[in-house]
Image (cartoon, rainbow, N blue to C red; front, side, top):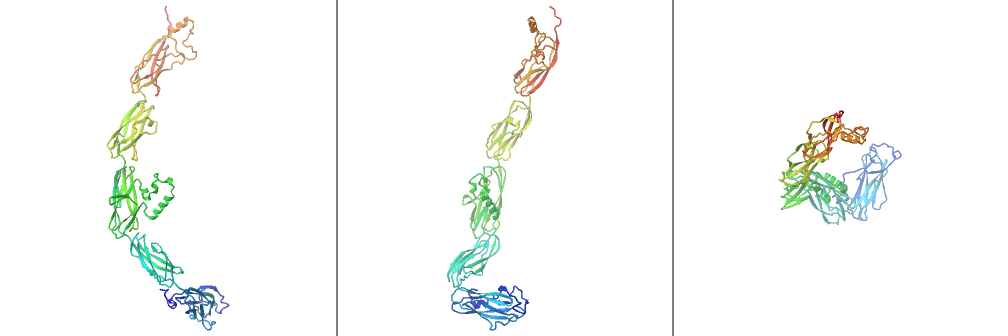
Amino acid sequence: QEMLQSTEERLANTAEVHQPRIQEFLSMDTTTYHSFSLVDVHQPLFQPYPSELIFQNFTPAQTYKLPLLLLNNDKVSRQVMLQQQDSEYFCVVGPEDPDRKVAPGLPATYTVSFTPQENKDYEHTIICVTERERFEIPIHAIGPRAILDFRDEIHLPVCPVKSCTEKTHLVRNMGNSEAKFELRTQRPFSVTPSFGTLDVGGSIPVTVVFHPMTTGDHRQDLLLHYHTGEDVYISLYGSCEELDIRLVPDSVWLTNTYISLANVQKVSLTNNSDIILQYCWTVSSSQQEEDLKEEEERERPVFQCDFDPMLHSLPLLFRALKYQFYLVSFNHSCLSRLKEGEIWPGTTANFLIVFKPEEAKLYQQTIYCDITGRESRLPLTIKGEGLGPNVQLDYNLINVGNVFIGDKNQYEVEVSNRGLIDAPFKLSSPDTTFGRCFSFSPEEGVVPPGACQIVKVTFHSRILGAFSEDLLLTVTGQPQPLTLTFRGSVVVPTFHLNVSELSFGDVPFGFPQTLSCTLFNTSFVPMTFALRVLGDGLGSPSVSAAKQVSEASRKTWQGHTARDLHALPAEFAVSPASNFVRAMSDVTLCSNTVKRYRLGLTVDVEGVGKEILTLPINARLDTLTDVNL
């Protein structure tokens, strides 16, 4: 409307003035006797009206005139004059007496004439000199201009959040020049076209789109920029509201599901509006969180992602739900994985939550539906518990009591599967002293549903002592193994002798005496033993009387029973000195002595220890002093 006015009309509609730009300050001591002024130094002594002279809608070779008033703002009379630069298009005519002072509050009137030669823009400046400053008054002659008839305000229809509405206007060029324009605005508004060229009298449709992401009232400016430098601001307004859209249900608790099996539950979204709803499933509660996650995914090295190389190319939603929950839709009897889609007015979108657990534990996941008509994303909480194979042992504790060292004891354990899926299992023992004494047959296997598996557990130890070991039955799919505890004690083989002591009584010197005893093995394992007499001499074996007489006839006997002058003779002979006794068997022992003593016959058991049993030996020496021939 302003551009279509004539020069006189625009001046008549000008109500605002502004302070001119001061070029320099002058010394009032040299220009006037009244060097003090009440006018602020940043404000000139004279206020021009209009602040700038504008000629528009002119015709070449015609003369146009505008009045210029300079109002004295001070409380005393002041002198003012105009300095005009040479111009063949502009001319300034002032008072007849230029040196006359202007009274306070009164104006000095000038006339500015403009005679254009072409239909183009002209620029000129008039310098105004007062007693204190020099300032400039600009003159603009606006040539041909394009004028697009936009409205001052554009109101968009009420829009659901995250949806969009638009309004199209047919814009005409009502000016007298070709229009080269550019259109710019800010979210949630957008405009098309963003730039263009329009001939005089031509028209073009301009569409403003309102796409709000938050509820409430939204205002922005649409900037119309002409190539000639003018900017026009058009006010844009739109209101946004939420739709009544909910997930039914908004939380899902799936029934307990065995691993390798699947369970499903339905979730629905109904579109009761008259627009098409766009939806998108995501694991992020907001757009900012989603942008942050995607940035972290891009920065994460490839070798740190999941083992499945195909997983890295899948959307973030499916990477988060992998092997736990699957989200599928089932419209028109067709199942398919999805991330986004649309819901037409008056229809319902159904989704299946497919739960396929990998291990026996409680799963919980929250996903979000970003849908048109709702400002915040709709949360869907999914919970489900995975069940592993239901395996049970017939015993949790087996007390084996006393176990003979070296004996192989075998026990049977029943592994039963009371679930609905196969139960792969494996038995293991701890890496301890007694844990390494266990072996299993079979060590691993698979128990079908409703079946049982007998596992033979063998214990074979060559170490004495009490033990309590936890054997672990690891079942695939169960987070914690089952424990079977074996307790007991490894003891020595049991045996005894049939006599309480060996009493030789009076033993003649040089005449061997023999006593026998029986060793009974009362254990269930064979036993290797060794017999020796504690305190017997360590020298050469003793010599019998017959051998002494024989050597004396040959005059070789030295008068003592041992040729070793330092060590005492070995006066006992045990037969057998060592042997292998099977379970429940006996051994006969024979001893030979040549003098009186009190010693012990000890039994050493191989692999068990020394001096396991000691049998007392009593004897008295009887020498041959009275001999009759």
